[in-house]
Length: 291
Image 1: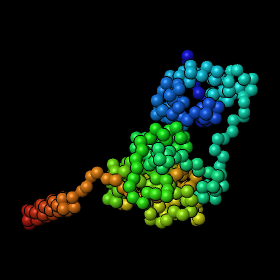
Image 2: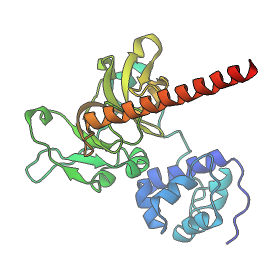
Image 3: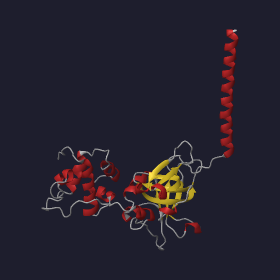
Image 4: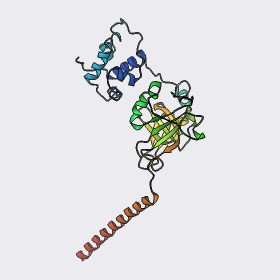
């Protein structure tokens, strides 16, 4: 099958999303399995800055021959060949809610959880390589059930919903080490966010671990700060946030030796002093030669 060049590309992505989410009732990873492609490949094919291949569309139309290509690419005609008219006009899947509802969590966030055999909530583990899939399927119980799960000791992990995330990047060092795991407690009402506390922020395109300044009342936003001074503050809008988790614990595997760190710093300082002495010696020789 030869696929014609695509026009109105943003709309074709929305229509495919409508087809598999609303009409088929499938999460993206289930849809990817149904057409014989990996979820990561399907996810990238549907990103606005990516151009899907002919193979991508062939897999869809071969699996779902009743799906009308003309409707997919242009929005014209019926969604299905077997229907004279579309079963429903295409509408936005996530109407924008009032900011007050978004901040407080009213009528907005449905948090999926899983339970162990005793009825206790599991702590799902989100590795950095699974971050994109987690964002795409954040409200899909089927996907959540595929994540690894752990149990945590201590009363501080009772009476709430907790999730573990792998730390990617060094923006929070030395407080939080790259490659460690952090445990977050779910925050339903974002108005309760406390300044300079560390939160795990699940956004539309990334999972960030930052100190937060709550500026929701002033401008419906948050300021994200890094403990690593090489990173600048980041201002975000609450409408770009999907979940927030309060940092409760860190699990790390690399324990640095403070004395070794001080020794290395001293060695670097001695090297810098030696460089300065050599430069002064060169300058002095140059002055004597001129005299």
